[in-house]
Length: 537
Figure 1 (cartoon, rainbow, N blue to C red):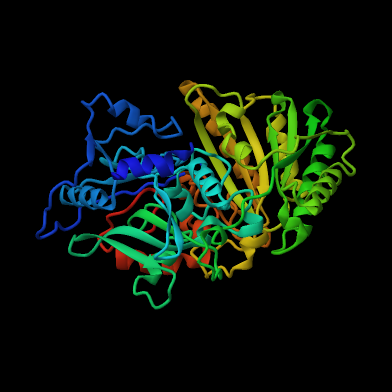
Figure 2 (spheres, rainbow, N blue to C red; figure 1 turned 180 degrees about the vertical axis):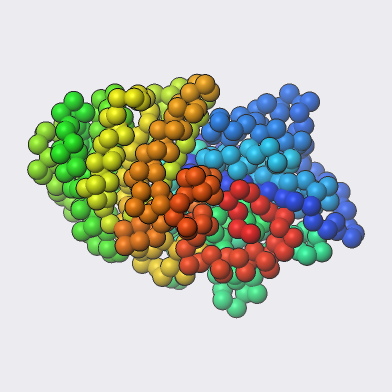
């Protein structure tokens, strides 16, 4: 059976903050072995009618790249060849998996060659390594469906089915099941990475979680060290830590037995500043009390979505597995706790109990759910929280959500669950340093009219700056903050106009793990081939 036919059978069985970029500057050319282009490597240039389609692969239409060529790869050998040719030509590289990079790291004018993984989507079980293999182009929707129908298992990834594995995994990968099972990166036991050494030699390296592996540090760097820093990942191997079975149905978390969401909905017209302050405090306090690793509360994933006042509604939802009776009770108690002392009574709505897979892979795109139907333009700024927002911060949020000089239904303040099993590991066990947070907060705006860019960016940036005014306009590490999540890249963090904390963007993303990540960078990318605006130097 051909590779393409096999891919159609495996990855084609099913249909999000998200591959990051990889960039390149000139490096020494390889001295020999030019090789031939492996069969199936496709090169698309601006004169090709397919070029416009490749430009639209990026999610955030504020950024549309104009590379000299897009290389559609189908194998590791293709990636080696594409990187080799780019390095020899001194061409900066961008790498695209699902296309959900949020801040233009791939669609950068400096990027001349884009390596596109849209046709590398295999998902399979590898009996040799006793682990599941996933290629970077596989989307979360494909992964959930294939793992579920094939083996009844899943991964604790994000809620957007269109996000690609390539960027999501290496940035940590958080989702509704992470409070029970950890980050996706916590399941990665090996990676295959195309690297470039000091002599400009391009090769594929397999790095594993075995401390005796000479490439152990390269594996470690890909468990939260972000995309575009060390090389190009061409394959992941995943297995739950500590599992000794050779039965593939036991090597990853069991998929939930069902899907149940309970929602508490408030009308903005009923929401005073005092009521909003109490509501946010209730949400945050519940997480302070229910986010310890292994606690009963970690079985519930919740999100608070507070859009601008003209949207009309504030929505808080909780998601559990209804096949576990104690989780249904947990959901009811969570919904009840939200309204205590708020004043206005929310509308409580529970979805009918459903099988787990279909609601999971059918989640609407964020922009569509906010009423933006055209190609979305967006800005996301986020921070990790070890404690709930203070009352003063909530008052700032209320001001920006209700101020009269700005109006837009798709500008939103959100808080989502974190913690639980994520925090079971030590901060240096993987490259993901953030192991004390309980929530992930964000300010998000999406729109579809280019002329409105500055208006929405100004609101978004002012909101975030004021929210974190006491720590320099960003969630700089403190007793309440733990920095930023690399899968929500924000280039504002390198600009002193927006980051007055004295803490660099890389420190915000990687914390105390940054020095070790820099050593890995020096070893595996000594020429600085792989780079972007937020990359490790």
